[in-house]
Length: 218
Image (cartoon, rainbow, N blue to C red; front, side):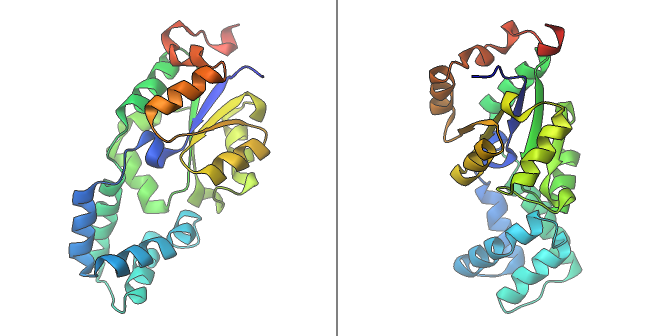
């Protein structure tokens, strides 16, 4: 197995925790849609939003039309803010590990399916995102996981061969695509099982990041 020179993280459900129920409640209040209708609209247009085919404003208007209504500009502004809050509950063990990797000189990156206003909101709210070597946001490339081209773009941005990148994502189809792109990849379900899988694959040394030297210094 090739040595790992960079670790590439998904954001949602890997660096972030499950969606914040308070933020979802606020989204429901702003839209006035019932749970089933809101869930259907929220996910129906999400991939197009993440892929940059829709701006945040257009995305929320599509959610509104799907529910048989319209949203004012004030509602949309509130929905954009609440949507950022929805996905910024943090998975502290994973963030702590990413920061240990960074301090040890291991290159880190993010590859996330995310819309324009979401990415801007995360960068505004989470200053530690600037410590990653590169963040590949799907909307900016007009691509989205599991398209192979987005993995290739992320590897190029990390200036690391795919076979020396460990990719971590919560969705099986995204992990499978990363492997097809030549990366090593692990599906993240919870932190305990993730650490066990790292050990099984002989990558446990990366969990002890303070003892790892930078591959660029070897």
